[in-house]
Image (cartoon, rainbow, N blue to C red; front, side):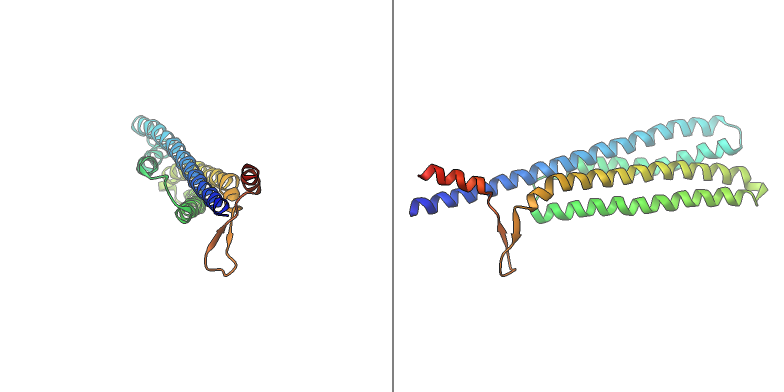
Length: 209
C-alpha cells in the first residue's frame, strides 16, 4: 500500500512539473509572438519615417507635402511604442504560474482589441478631415493630405492590431485550452483539482503489477 501511495505521489509530482513546463513553453511562445509583432510595427514605422521625412522635405506644399508630414509625425509615435514593446517582451519572464499566465493573456487580448477600436476612430478622423477640406479652400491641401495619411496609418494599425489579437487568441485556444482541460474546480468550490490523464494512471498501474 505504501508503494502505491508513493507511486501516486510521484505521478502527481511529475504531472505538476510537466504542467509548469507547459506553462513556461506557452509564455515563451507568447512573448516571441509579441517580439515579432513589435518588429513588424517598428519596420513599418522606420520605413514611414524615412519616406515621410524625405517626402516632407522635397515635395512642394500641397496634398502630398502634408501627407508625408503627417506620416512622419505619426510614426514617431509608432516607434515610441514599438521599441519599448519589444524590449518589454525580451525582458519579461516566461516563468509564470497559471493565474499570472491567464492575466497576461487577457491583458494582451484586451489591449489589441481596444487598439482596434481606436484605429477605427483614426480612420474616421481621416474621413472627417477629407470632408472638411471641401468647405475650407484655404486649408484644403492640408486637411486632404492629413486625412489621407490618417486613413493609411489607421488602416494599417487596424489590420495590425486585429491580426495580433487573432494570433494571440488562436495560440490560447490551441495551447492553453488543452491545459485548462486538465484542471477543474474541486467539489467544495474552494480549490482546484488536477485531472491526471488516464493514460498516465494506466502506465503506472502496469508498472506495479
